[in-house]
Structures are given as structure tokens and as C-alpha cells.
Length: 149
Image (tube, rainbow, N blue to C red; front, side, top):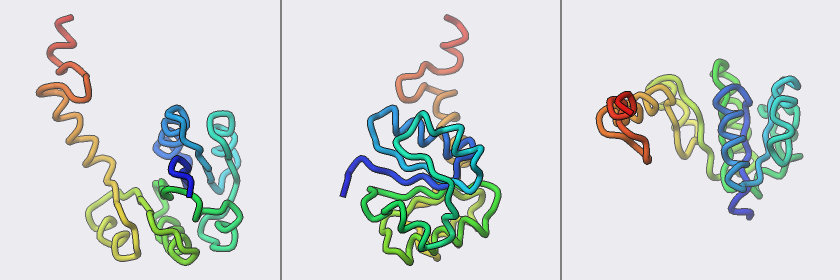
């Protein structure tokens, strides 16, 4: 299994940014989306960008997801597609699946379906930004310090 190969499903703002970030750090990224325009937007930045229906287990097998360190389901607005994609990944045997959630309720459902980790982006970003405002985070100065400079 390639420790630095990731499967990103859903190439909206979050998925595309994650795919690009991983690729910049040397990871091999397989980026997939149903929308060819989204695929085109990242194809020069990742190892593989493919138009694919990730809710179809047979289609998923074509990208060899079992050789990925993790699959990240970054679908934003279509919760049904997120659940079906998660189920398809579990069906083909993917063990490490990270799923994007928009609420605590969605998080509970995604965990019940089999996500090994769930990320509530707005919640996570709010906590991270709050820490940055107060005292800086990850090498960033606190907001007040940045304004004084």
C-alpha cells in the first residue's frame, strides 16, 4: 500500500484545495468527481484526475482504492451522494475513510455508515480561527499582532 497515495472524492472548494495541498506535499493524489469541469480544474495539479461516479462500487474499483492510504469523501451539498459513496467504498473494502460533514447529525450518520473519521469543516475552522485570534496557531501571529506590524 502506498503510504502517500490518497483518493479524494468531490472536487468542490474543499476537495480541490485538499487535493492540491496533498500533491504539493509530495503525495500521489487520485482526484475524482462526476463533473468534468471540476476534474479539469485540478488535472494539472494532481497525479490523476478522473470523471467518475463514486457511488458505483465497480467504477471505484477502476481507480484501485485499496492501494490508497485513505479515501476522503469531500462531497459538500449532496448528502445522499456522500452516504452512497461511503457505502460503495466500504463495499469494495476501503478501510480508512474520512468524510466531510455539515452538521453533528450528519456526522453521526456517516459514522454509522462506516466513516473512520468525520470532519465538520465549519466547526473545525471556527476552533482553529478562534485559537489564531487569541494567540496564534501554526506559526501564525495572533490577529492583533498582525495588525500592529
